[in-house]
Image 1 (cartoon, one colour):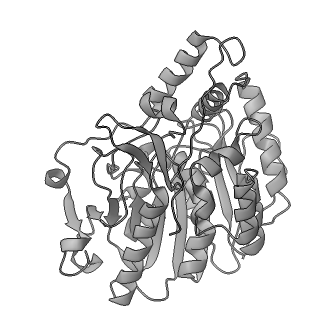
Image 2 (cartoon, rainbow, N blue to C red):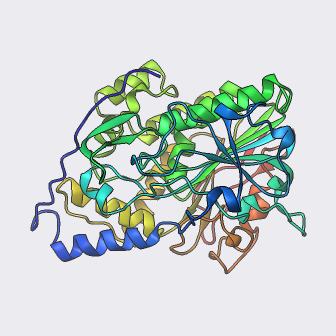
Image 3 (cartoon, rainbow, N blue to C red):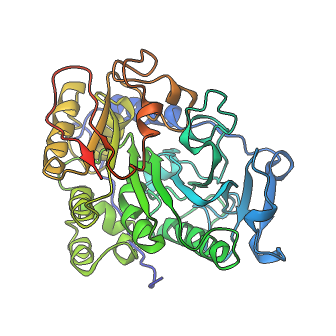
Length: 413
């Protein structure tokens, strides 16, 4: 990893320009309440834990149970945002040695001092429950991933899993806030490659899926190309869940720059130059990845009027002095405009869900959601649609939406 950068993002909060104080308070309060609730108590009592640096076998998959998860603590440069946060870990369900689901956990974002100390991101590495794609029981045999090896890349850095920055402000113990999402992801790479070297995972993976919700959806879009090209599976798919990448005008490039994202290993020289110029967008990444990985389906899961995405748009707009104009109707239309730019690629698809729900894949409603709503179903159900991925040779999949066709083509291999 290249050298870190120290930057400052100035929050303007100019009342009367970017909205009233009551509006700002309402937006921030909503987002705090929207964060996932995960237990910090007795982590290594309630869960199996393994520390790579003290393990005699590097926390080998071969010694992990299949029916429950194990927390792997990689040590090294990995860390959470605060000096008093938990040590960084990722959550592993051992399974098939040739099939791996790389899952990026969600948990908000902390992009400046205000968002950090009003708790707009998760700050501890805490495991998810065995629900949604993590469900190992799967009595009806619908969850494709119930027998796979799953690596849940836990999120506690507040930087969309992509930062490398020491902030010019301190945590409550007087230690600089440090966002090391890149180091956390790279620690997962190193562990997976060690599993391959020792035979715990196959050298040639047959199937890889990269998935994540919310902030993890953004990370899925950032890291998917590198994961697929680095591990080179026979078949692959990318599933960003519930963050399409809609940002207020002229904020996304500076946000990436100030997270310290410009030294990320997933950026090629052209994209790195855009990052340094503070003009890099998620659309730049996605159009590059979809073109270069033409046989890999990029299958977005997106609610038509996702409330959490709307409120993060408003919060970021407020923090840089913009008027937080974002309605459900505008969100839907601007999301469609992003999809229109992806629609020129045959490997772009979307599963569009009616309603405001944020995130599906890590929850029980993964098996209930359909185009008609998060619990209203419709055909096909989201779980059944995702379980066709990666596509086998000669098979195809089409976009799903309840209502008039939105022009998204099907993908096939």
